[in-house]
Image (cartoon, rainbow, N blue to C red; front, side, top):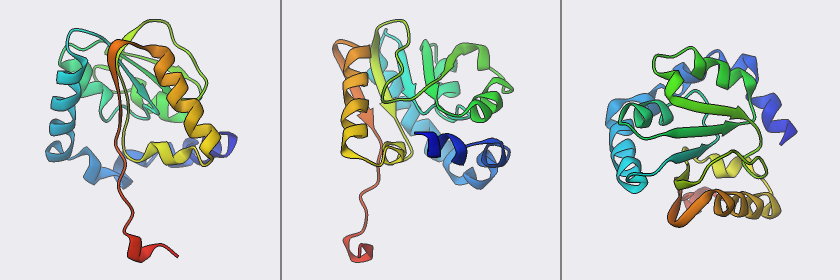
Length: 153
């Protein structure tokens, strides 16, 4: 994931929330957080590719214990500057390999981030890592758009 780490460096992190502003709209965030809070139940949640905390921060404000993993120190620095950041235990690491302490009722991955893992082996490793973190009966949720077939080469 070295290329992803470089892509999501300081230059992108400095303007990420602005260039992705539509995804920060409460009309987009709140339904996602509602669903994730329901799925987490009384357990903790782990966000792979937590970024600047678009989902993790409002989820933590709902009382869910949230941990996050991201390859980009610059993105995590932006998260840590935000109100409520103390409610998210964020770690630098690769979502396909990094382990964090604890057991989670929910592991989730949003905003098409699964596609940052560009090989099938990387995606399979991500699923295995989610399985290693999620407690019995827990869930792994992935948000990904379905590409329009007409636009594929």
